[in-house]
Every structure is written in structure tokens, then in C-alpha cells.
Amino acid sequence: MDLIMGMNSGSSFDGIDVVLAETELAEDGFPKAPKFLCGGSYEWPEEVRKIVTDAFENRVDMVGLNRLNYICGAVFAEKAAQFMKENEIDPLRVKVLGLDTQTIYQEQPDHKAISEMSEEEKADWPGRWLSKKYPAGTQMGDTSVIANLTNIDTVTHFRPADHTFGGAAAPLMPYLDYVLFRHLDHPTMTLNIGGIANLHVACADRRRMLGFDTGPGNVVSNYMCRELFGVEYDKDGMIAAKGKVNEKMLDYFMHHPFFDRPVPRSGWIADYNAEYISGTIEKFSYLHKEDILATACAFTAAAIVRSMYDNVPAEVIRATRKLYCSGGGVKNPQIMKELKARMPENIDVTTSAEIGIPPEYKEAIKFATIAYSTINRVPGNIPAAGHASQYAILGKIALAPRNISGGAQLD
Image (cartoon, rainbow, N blue to C red):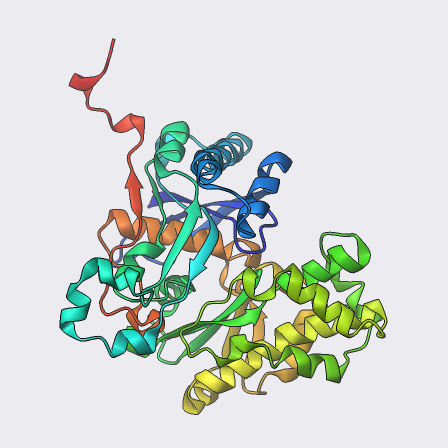
């Protein structure tokens, strides 16, 4: 078995998760389901957090972004090294480290426009992006900085390969779900509730798989916690539990233009930014603060279920037995209560802990698994889910100093 490490810092930007797992290639050429060994979570340095937050709002110039790329790489390397020291992990025993680094910006693909492009238009490679039809994104964290500081072969920036073929490249969870559930004879749903929530349908036949963002995960409630209560998040959903869902406000939320986008679609914190949240709070300022937060939790759940009914075939919903949830949102009992109340009775809502993957670490395990696939030349995208035109090997690889051949060593 090979040891693999993964890291994640998502759109909620609430910390860096690090995991160690083990896997190996199965007879079908794909990795076996990774076995979680240990994990840890770490805070971003406050000085760096401020720069990244400014980058989200497009307040960092090109010079600043250039340096931020190196800074983030150094932060990821530092947290990986801290994790290995705390868990007595020898970096020389780790086969690969995988992380997508920190997304600060992403553009959606125009799937309809891409489908209508002629072969001649697609053959104009610069024109794919000059026309603004193909997706693009920016992640902060230089691959070589991470590989050279940790002394582990590192794979990062998984999305551009899928973008090249018109794929959304978000969410990326369907690949891990395929690895986990490809031997089952029935569809399985998974849900990740991070800053943005995304729903996936895993099948043994990759051509039938689905994956798309459903709307907000924790991003709306976290913004509201900061603005209304002066705290970073609603620990254990205790504040929202004191409130009542306001149907008028929920209806307002459910008319967000995000729902007009066809799947596969990707949400981003810009969809639910400070301006949107502040405007919503002002519009419903006559409500108790706890009611506003309770309604935000209901919005997350209602958006998930609406997105499922709107975009998953009815026969697949009827055939689904489990919904395995992961991400920080599963720690909020109010979100989970609202979700269970809205789900069809045939679907058992549980967490990925039931299959041995701690919910808070599934994203990091995903990146470790994709990285392992990359170094073994296994495609890590699911075209049926992201609408790419073909399979692709994801990520950018940087080799660690330990790979320097003996004859090339310097005295």
C-alpha cells in the first residue's frame, strides 16, 4: 500500500485540512478506496488570511498576486510539515501530496455556447478563452514551493485540465465517489457542505454520473454570524436553534439567480458576497437575528433538495438508498435537521463516517486520491458530471529534491 497525503482549503476559507491515507491501484487500474489514517486542521496565519480575503474581493494587484502565490505555497508546506511532525510521518515514505491550493477566482463555462461551437472555432485554441466561453480559474499556492519545502512529490491545480475540454472542474468530488462506490449495483448520492454545497450521483458506469453545486453551504450563515453576532460561525448551530425559519425570507433566498444556471454549475463566494448578505439582512431587518440565521440554514437545505429534484432523474432519486454527507456543514445540527426534513423518505441521510471517512476530511482525501491517480496516469475527471469533452489527467506535478539523481548531487 502507498501512503498519500492530501490538503484542502475551500471556499469557506476557515482553515487548512491535512490527511494521511493509504491506497494502491486495483486490478481495474483505478485506486482502491483510500483508507483514512489520520488528519489535522490548521489556521491560516492572520497576515496571510487578510491578503487572501482581499484577493477574493479583487483588491490585490498583479504584483501582490504574484507574491501571494509563493506565500500560500509556503503556508501549505508549513502546515504539511507541522502535520507530519505531530504524527511522526517520514516525508520519504509519502508517495504523493495532493492539494488544489486556494481558489480565489473562477469563471463558469458557457456550456450552451460551447456545444454550439463549430470544430473550426474549437480549433482556435486562444479563442476558447478570448470568447469567454471556456472556464478559467486562479488558485494560489506554487507547486514547486510546496514540493521543495516538504520534500514530497506534489500535485496541485487540478481544474485547468478539465477546463481545457470545456468541463466545469467543480465540483471535483465525483472522481473520489467513483473510486469509493464503483462496485455497487445501485446509484449512491454524496453531498459536500463546505462554503458552497455540491451534490453528486455515483454509479458504476461513469457515463451516468452527475455532479453540481447546489448553492450555499456555510458561506451565508458564516457571513451572517460575523455581521450579526460578531463570531466566525455558529458553533453546533446553537444560535440558529433559537430562531424560527421565516418563509418570506426563504422564498427570497430561493429566487437567487444561481438557480437559473444549467448544470453542471459552480457556485462561488461572489454569488453570496458581503454585499448580498448585508442587503438581505437590511431587507429583513424587522426579523429577530436568530430567525435570520435559522432561515439561512434552511436556505442551504432547501437549495440542496431543490437542486436534486431539478437536476437528478426521478428514477435515480427513487433508486438511491444513501446520501453520504461531508464537509463542515454536517457539524451544524440545524442544517442537517432541515435537510433530513426535506429529503425523500427512501434516502437515508447519513455522513461519510459510515464508510470510514471523517466528514471534515473527505475533501482533503479527494485531493490525495486524485494526485495518486495523476502520478499513475489515471484520468481524474468525470466528463458526464462536469461536461468536459473527454477524460483528462488532472494537475500540475512538481518533483521533490529527493528525486535528484546521484550523479547530479552537488557537493
